[in-house]
Length: 433
Picture 1: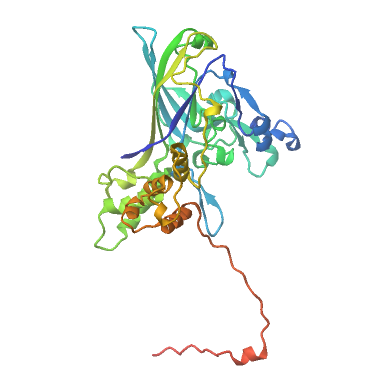
Picture 2: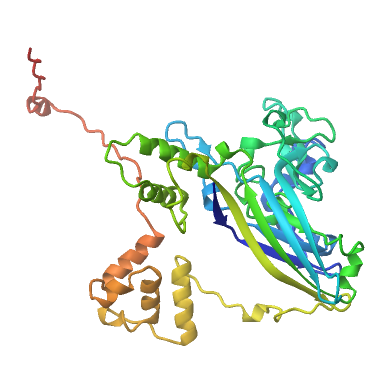
C-alpha cells in the first residue's frame, strides 16, 4: 500500500537565443583532487555565489525542479550524542512527459518516460549522464584522496527497467571508470551542498530535477525557435527504493509496534494512526480507514507532482510569445510580516487602502486584524466576543516567537558559621521488615 504525497513541481523554459544568466552551483567540486586545497577559492560558497554565472542558453529546453516534503528534509538531533539524523531522501523518480505539437494536425503527440536514479554516482559523466558533482572519499581517513564524482543517473524508459538486487547496491568505494555506485542511506537532504542541496536547482540537476532537451522531437536545438508552437505536460513520481529506509514506513512501523504494546481496550487504529501521521510527518490524509494493523508496516510514501500544458511558442529567434505579460520589476510589490499569513493580511489592507484599527473597538473594523483572525482560525472567537485585540495580538506574537531554555545561572555564596547552625540533618528511615 502507498500513501500519495503531493509535491510542488516547477518548470523553466530556456530558448537557445536567451540572453538571461543564472547562478551556478554553490561549489565547484570538480576542483577536488586537481589542485591544492588552499587554491580552491570556488569551494567557498559566498565567493562562488557572488561571481559564478552561466548563460541559460547553454542548456536550452525545459528544466524541471521539484520540492521534497519536509518529513524527508528535517533532521533530528540526538540529545545524548549531539549527532543529527536526516531521513533518506526519495531516490527513485519516474518522469512522464506528454508532448503536443500545435502546428501539425496529425501525428502531433508524443510520450517520453524517464527513470531517475538520484543516488547513483560515478567517477565519470558517462556512468551517470549527469553534470551534478559531489565530493567523494573512498577512505574517510585519507583527506588527500578526496575527489569529485558525478551524481544522478537519468535513463529513458524505452524498455524494461528493474531495481538492482540489494546485493549489487554498493556505496561506490573504489569505483572503476564508468562503474556506478549508490549512496543509499547517505543520500540525505544536506548531502554535499548542505542545506541548499534540495532547494537550489544548480545543485541537484538530474538528481531532484530534470533537463528535458526535447531532442526526441527537435534533434537540433535551433529548431526550438523555428516557428514552434507546442505544449508539454509532466507527471513526476518518486519513492525510496528500500521501503524499510522510507521515513513514512519507519514512522508507521514504529507506531504499529507501540499500538500493539498498548493494553486493552485499545483505541481504534485509524484514530490512533491519524495522530501519529499528522504530528510526526505533518501530513493530512484524505482517509485513515485504509490503514490497518495488517498493512501499516508495508506502507510507504510515493511523491507525486503534475504540471500541465507548459506552453512554448516562438516564431523566430529572440521573439518568444508569452502566455502572459513578462513580469516587470516596476510592478513588483513587497509586503513584510512575521509569517506569510500576516504579510498577506498587511498587503491586502494596503491595497484596499484601509486604515488599521486602534484598541479593542478597532479589531472588527481593521481588515488586517480580521484577515489574521481568519487565517489562524480565530475569527469565530472574535465574533463571539471570546477573543479581543490583546489575546489576538498575543497569539500572533506566539506564531513568530517562542520561548526556549536559556540555560542556568549559578551563584556562588560563601557559607558562614550561622548557616551551618541552621542546617537540618536528615536521616532516611530504616526499612521495616
